Image 1 (cartoon, helix red, strand yellow):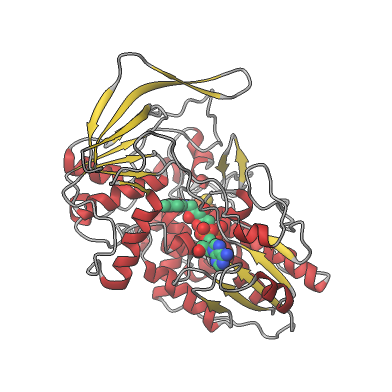
Image 2 (image 1 turned 90 degrees about the vertical axis):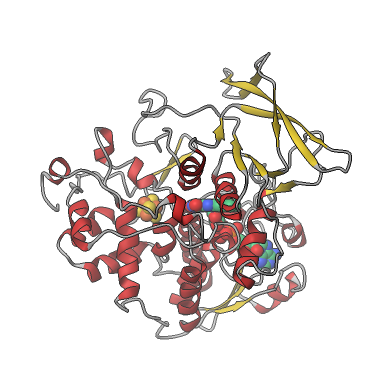
Length: 495
Ligand SMILES: Cc1cc2nc3c(=O)[nH]c(=O)nc-3n(C[C@H](O)[C@H](O)[C@H](O)COP(=O)(O)OP(=O)(O)OC[C@H]3O[C@@H](n4cnc5c(N)ncnc54)[C@H](O)[C@@H]3O)c2cc1C
Ligand code: SF4
């Protein structure tokens, strides 16, 4: 334990992010760091409770509770308190291959289940995690660690998101020869094309890819397995295949006027901007621009939020984010949403904070259903027609949305992004390999085992569990590597 009374002596504090009005002028990361002394104080708030829930990593009521990669949180909090940074880094890498990603983008289910959160403010776990790994890189402690021997076994990993990267890193550690196939022109999956640069600088992703290459992993880009790289080739050439292709089949809306000019899928909008930014600092103009436009984002989740932040940086005229869910309570409803579940409380994410700073109000409109898009005589979007809805749950747990009469509204708009979720993995490769799927069209493979219905083919990450979180993808990638190692060698030392 750091200090027995630290959680009473010190308040939870977070480093201030960059000023919202300043940061929307560029595409740089908005995170800032605490000093070592401030981090020591925050680490001192961890009481190393006898049964810490922060690192349990389970699903409760459909949300994550505790750390899905089972980070040894109380241990590194104590090491930071004692100034033992290098030891803290070693502890962190024991459970998480990529803390520089989770330290930046994880929603921190560990903090929701921190014991102090029962009666007060959780330990600042995520901030400490990012600081440990960032210091590790600054100090030159993170260096390539190639395996001492090779097993002669060859494994192909399809997809280079966090699940594919974690699988590759662990299998390489076990001495197998790993090739990662990625259909995009850059490695990283949604870490690269998905999550915007201001949340996760792509140099941070590339830095880890470079390390993995130096450790002996081969990455092949512009290589779509089941497309320009035949699936049979992999089946013939490799001893095992791990599918980590993600779940990015966009969910569509069935709303009249969907085909009007100016109505786009969120991922086309986000990825166009990221690619153009990385290729040419946005000078090639190959992206959908929100400049001077009235923008509406349909969808209240992470993807919608990233669209809001992107539109602000484009210089939109106005921004509104629709969600069908009602406004969350200001404090946790302990009956419906008890600790250690992920707390469902009203907060401003980075994009809403920026919009509020610029326009004076939270850009979200809650409990809104879009009824139709209306265009002008040239087929260009002009306005959205909506109605307020009430959400109830019937006795079987099914959600029912009821329109509230008299709440119809018309919203002027020239650009709309649809961010209403994803419908599982794309099916081309799944069908080519003849894989069984579950009822949500994800590749069927039991959690903890990762074996698909086809011999020597494994699946992990969003492709197996559906659109989720970076930290779950890392967890599944690590565990799938362990199962592949067991399959290849009959036994395994991987965690
Ligand atoms: C806009 C957006 C923002 C998000 N923000 C967050 C966040 O802030 N925090 C968080 O924790 N999670 C976030 N998520 C979710 C998170 O990014 C994903 O859960 C995670 O990336 C899944 O990892 P994965 O490796 O399973 O798949 P992905 O990251 O989707 O990677 C799959 C990769 O496989 C490749 N691929 C697919 N098929 C083939 C093929 N046949 N051949 C070769 N390559 C193929 C794809 O091109 C892709 O690069 C966000 C998701 C989105 C869409
Ligand atoms: S990976 Fe996420 S859940 Fe785990 S310690 Fe870090 S912030 Fe918390």
